[in-house]
Image (cartoon, rainbow, N blue to C red; front, side):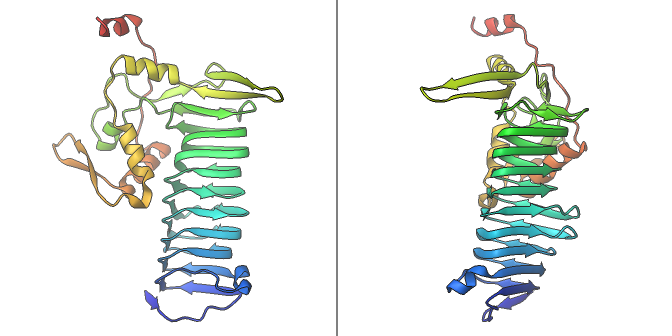
Length: 324
């Protein structure tokens, strides 16, 4: 890795390959506002980046500061290796990565007019007008003013005007929202992991009884709410298993360490300390690091870790007994 201490950047274009930039890449003159930055691989930028357009052609590449682009942040579809953004990433227009062979990680939030990501891990949330995700994991929420298109992904929750789902969709939180009725292609399945014992699944131990995924029915699990004031009437559709989750809490279910697991992961680059979730079946402590949690969720997504299904049923007499 070559350290760049004194380098004269071209006013219209910066190309980096095999470089360490010890600082930020920010415009100092008006002409530099239209500067394009191209990362050709093996590059670390320790500070923030502002660019008219930022293209990542190849890993291993890491940007440790916040990123903002006027037009586009684009990851080349042929990119390989690790591509990491340690702080928030934003664009006035689009953020796009359809790369199938790279390890793309966002440690914080994403904000843009349109976001398209394949095979990406996002520790924060995504805010945009239009969002397309395929084979992705988003620990936070996906919030779009116009549309969301999800294919085979794990997300915390979502909220949008229109939503399209395909293959398998996994929710980490009890509810998700849309204005229009959700559109699905035939064979699509939607599961909720609110009552999955993710702590035990992470440790490789036996999950607690009556824990697991809940299959959601987009017809029966839909709750329609109409909000009105003197001028506007708006209908919101909620797709929720919150009744089953509340029943589980009344039954005094073990806390599955789900909230701790998700909250610690959402810290992203701030998760400097390695935490422990207890011990495995061999009595060895199980450490929780960002990379391990990321791998854990992708194993669920790809079916390597099987989450058993529960029906969400409960006996009201069990609830009454807890109050006696």
